[in-house]
Amino acid sequence: MINRILEQQKALHEVLSEDRNTRHLILGHQDLDVLESVSKALGPLLEFTDALSGEDYVSVSHIKPVLNLFNTTILAPEEDDTDMTKSLKKKMLEYMNSKYEDRVTQELLDMASFLDPRYKTQYISVNDVPNIRARLVSEMKTIMEHKSTRVEEVSPPPTKMAKKSLASFFKKSTASATVPIDHTAAIEAELSAYLLSSTIDNEEDPLLWWRTHKVNFPQLSNMARKYLCMQATSSPSERIFSASGNIVSCERSCLKPDMVNKLVFLAKNL
Image 1 (cartoon, one colour):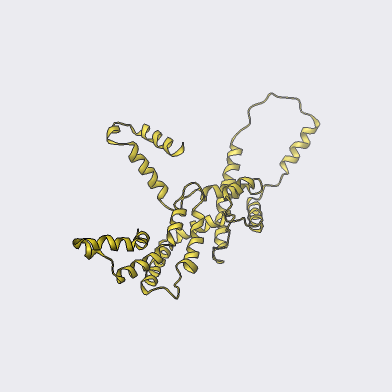
Image 2 (cartoon, helix red, strand yellow):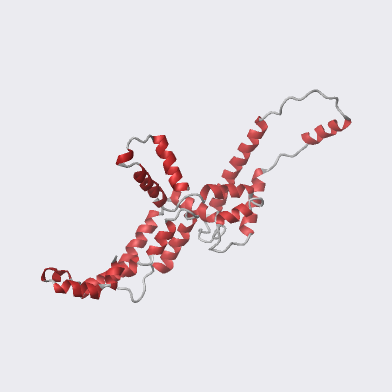
C-alpha cells in the first residue's frame, strides 16, 4: 500500500488539489520521507513472509537461515538509511530474535535445520551440535528398541511337530550365540555418514532427497519425516479456518461436525 502511494503520489497530488475540501490530504515532503523510510525497512520482508507462509514444501528448516540473513544482511543498518529506517530495522530484529529465543523453540529449529540436507549444521552453534546429536540418538534408540520389543512379543504360529534333522541342532546353537545388536553404535554410524555426505542445492526438495536416501539412512529418515513436516507459520492453519468459515455459512448451519470435517478435507486436498 505504501509503495503504491509513493508510486502514484503525483497523480494523488493533482486529484486532491482540485477540490478545496481535500487539499489538506496532500502529502508533504515530511510525509513522503516517512513513507519512504517505512517502505525501505518493510519492503524486503514481503517475499520472505510469503515464502515462509507456504504449505506445499518444507518451511520450518528455513527459519534459522532466514533469521541469520536478516541479522547479517537484510535488516542490517546501511549508511544511507534514515534514522527512522534504522530504528525500524532495529525494532524488527529485536522482536524476531526474541520471538525465537526460547530454549525449546531453539532446539526444535536446530533439529529441523540439522535434518535438512541443504543446511545440516551450517546455522547451528558449534556448542549445540553435540546436544542435537545426543537428542537424535536418544529418540532413534527409543524407536528401535520399541520396534524390537514388538517383534519379540509377536509369537510365531504353532507348527506341527516334525522329525528333527541333524542340521537343526547346529542352527539352534548358532542362533543362541548371536551377539545382540548395538543400536547406539548403528545410530552413531548413520549420523556420521549423514554429516559426511555433501549438502544439496538450496533449490532442491529435501523430502525427495530423503525418499531417495531412505535406504542409507533408515532411522534418520524417520526423524526427518517427524520434524520437517511442521509449518514455519500459522498461515496454513488460518487458511483451514477460512475454508471452514466458507463451508459453514448461514445457509448450511445444520451441517454436522463429521460432514464439516469431510468437506474441509476435500476442500484442502482436491
